[in-house]
Image (cartoon, rainbow, N blue to C red; front, side, top):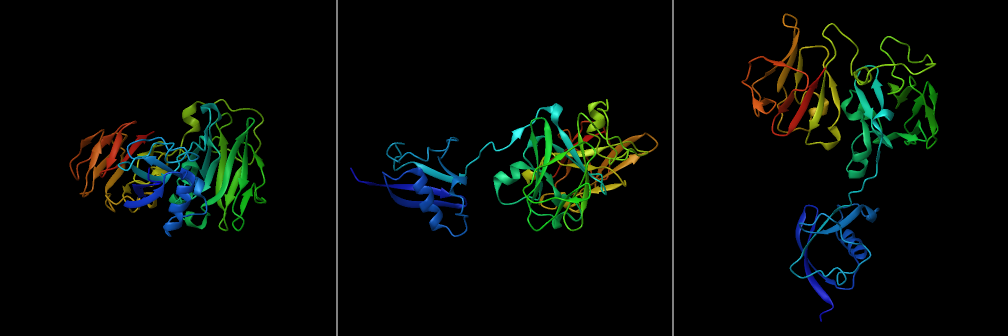
Length: 338
């Protein structure tokens, strides 16, 4: 039998590659050899990659040979990232929150470790990204992996990760790679511009109007909806848009507070800037003081607006109710919440 086999390999966007490889080669060695051939693929961490048979979700065992795996000439191999569950989801009672003090935009801490930073080309990094600084006005001054919040033995800790970009806890500069215990009401600041956040746990929510620097002697009894409030109370109540579907997976779960109404929703908002099928001024959300209702209208967008799957007419005002699914363009879906 021939010691070599001709196979077709798809390496990310480099599809249809033909290769003659040894039957005795292991999958791990094959990955190493493939990475040497493509300059545009990061070869520093080969453990991030896997090979799968086309049409099969399970990756091939990296320690087995092509013979052991019974790979045949007609088989097609796909090289991609190894998808791992690298974050641990927290029990809902242990959820926490970071609220940025200038914009009142808040981020849920629902897994550990929870990265604070910006999206990158590393899939695993984006999976763990809980606080996407890119949606903030000066968020680009923050490192991609600036810090991370870790939950261990019933307590939260902040661990700075950026050697040249500072992290502060209640005004104190923290050393890189140190574990610093957090309590509800603590203030965290990141970067040279000191982007400031208030940390809150679900068991000890910080009420608006309280001084977060004051210690809390005992848990504050508050319903869950108080804890997840995204913006300070206003004369129009409290409402947010929660991103459920997006071309940018790191945006899913992020919340946009509805303040300073009317609010134009579209690529003019930084978090929507990468959504190519959304118009710059796609829709407008407002508050009708006469009916005491939030409203939305399509600003003659190219790809339209839907409410719970039904397309609405341009320039016509529609009422929004809690739980309404708003479709923006072909992919983006946000849920309206109060």
